[in-house]
Image (cartoon, rainbow, N blue to C red; front, side, top):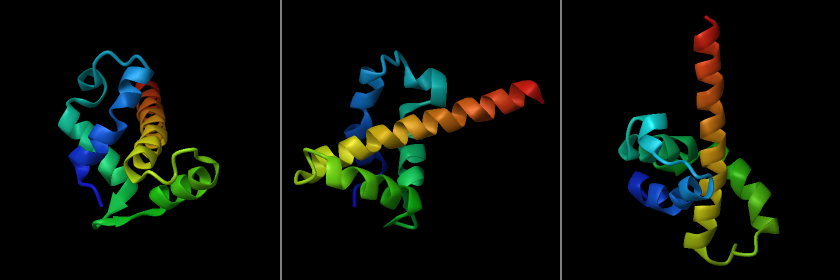
Length: 97
């Protein structure tokens, strides 16, 4: 299993794809992005429910499911979108409170 920075490198392309100019503005730092991404997919060094949910959805439909690095990168993209959605909802809730 990859560590946090490996997952962040695998998922980092999504930041460019989404035209996010500076993840530091959203999450505080690249290291924090790595830790949040890792925590979203891994608990106690084992794949968690989020990992399995994304994996189970993507694996059968992916054109890159036989390439572990590219496939994990695809999973990180989905996880990043989910993370950004949660952050948006949290911010919306705090702005209303």
